[in-house]
Amino acid sequence: MKHGYIRVAAATPDVKVADPQFNRENIVRLIREGIERNTKIMVFPELCLTAYTCADLFGQDALLTKAKEELKVIVKETEGSDLLVFIGLPWERDGKLYNTAAAVQNGRILGLIPKTNLPNYSEFYELRYFEPGNKKPVMISWEGYEIPMGTDLLFACKDIPGLVIGTEICEDAWVPNPPSIRHAVAGATVIVNCSASDETTGKDLYRRSLITGHSASLVCGYIYANAGEGESTQDLVFGGQNLIAENGLLLAESKRFGNETIYGDMDLERLIHERRRMTTFPAPDRENYLVIPFTMEQVELDLKRRIDPRPFVPDGEAERNRRCEEILSIQAMGLKKRLAHTGCKDVVIGISGGLDSTLALLVTARAFDMLEIPRNRIHAITMPCFGTTDRTYQNACILTEKLEAELTEVNIREAVSIHFRDIGHDPGQHDVTFENSQARERTQILMDLANRFGGLVIGTGDMSELALGWATYNGDHMSMYGVNASVPKTLVRHLVRYYADTCEEKALKEVLLDVLDTPVSPELLPPKDGEIAQKTEDLVGPYELHDFYLYQILRFGTRPSKVYRMALAAFDQQYEPEVILKWLKVFYKRFFSQQFKRSCMPDGPKVGSVAVSPRGDLRMPSDAVSRLWLLELDNL
Image 1 (cartoon, rainbow, N blue to C red):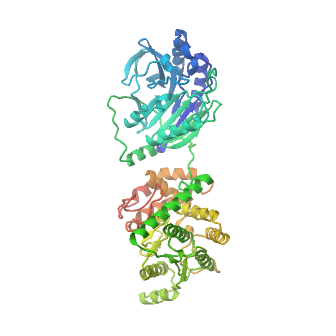
Image 2 (image 1 turned 30 degrees about the horizontal axis):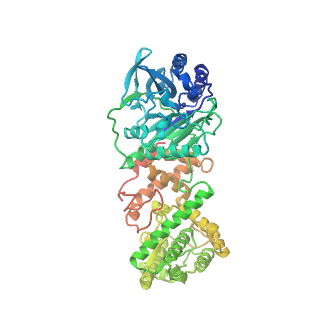
């Protein structure tokens, strides 16, 4: 459970109606399996010790007595284990019967949680048998010690900060004001639900949406265990749809119509960070709650959780295409508003034949179409110099032509050479002065042309470059509106690919595909045998690694050792551990040292949950040091 991970399970045992012994045997078997897998929380369905569909048999003393006897066996089975188990069973108190979940750990019952909302409509008749649960806990006697019973119980782990568990039962989750809201406001980070929800057409979709939605709105983990095969089919069928969700993300789901145990590794640190980040999430209010402490040994998990290596890029073609269309629209709408506000009908954009300037030109064309401004008022400027290759030059020209923008070529070799003479720089010395002089000369040309046309300079730099500081200060770093400012490099590629796949003109598609196939390069050093000599990813590292680091660090405040561990899982067999560590150190060094560039970056639209604008998401001092973060990596 290092780094805040905790393994949880939702289990549907085989049951027989009104046979607590058979049911207990199967529950115990699954508990043993959970212990072997280092599971720390395991949830079973509603009334699983007797079966949910006992109906009027719940009025039989023999059944109620046997259920408690078998519960004793389960409780004893947990001795010596810190697995926290939630089991559904009927419980009689003061002449009334309650539908409860028993929280069991290490040979003791920690508490009993009664169901609050009893459905008595359609196929449900729970008020015929059960009494609604009490909120305020009361103490009841059990095997020589006192047990609290009530809905307002929280189970808080003394060994794992932030692990606080609240409980609700089936229908409790379906009402307008579920107990889980109260639990989460009181500090519960994990909600468990012992459920018996029957199957009807389409109900599985609603149930999945309900549980993932609860986990998102409450910023919590949610473990939902549902009754399955073995329940009476006299009038209903139970499918055993188990769900494990975390802040809107579905970690695991069982197949329906076959009893199954599902496991998921929840990230408590991520949940806690998200609540801390959201200033609208209330501070814990535990008035009227009884908090029950328990202990749990921390173990090293063989992490089973899937870590997405490309968190900015959705899985699945349909979702990826939808996201790309949405992002292009956000970018274009941002530029549209800026043009309308300033009254500008002309823009100037430096076009290199690379990915970033290609995307910026595509977005600009879309914004002009929205405003019904002719595209020939987009002034695409190509500025070849020492490092320009024929491939990128031709792609820039063809792309501009196919998008019906106006193309202007300004060869900057002579101007840069004169500048070298003026500042006393040897042009044979290919250092940072050699490179950055070209970038600043290009920016000067773009700015001056914008003045000439009465227009705006459109920035082309992306968020990954801003994070790494891979931009020439007051060179390509500067513009009048940066349409790519919050688009990471890995997503730039997919946006251009989406445009290529959806455009109807063959020649435009071909040039976009060739741009995609061109190595990422600033082209500031002379080519070798006509080919690009300067490849960005050879110098600063693979962008897919840096984008992964950027997402985890900025979105969730993930500590360096955890980012490294996550990257090992995400890029298993793709990068060696020493390579991942090397570029992670480079990321931290560059991210901290280059904040001064981000502090004065131009305006640009935010498109995703991570952005580096100093006016929005990232208020970071330019003089912060990276020592603390790098030291943790050095000590791995």
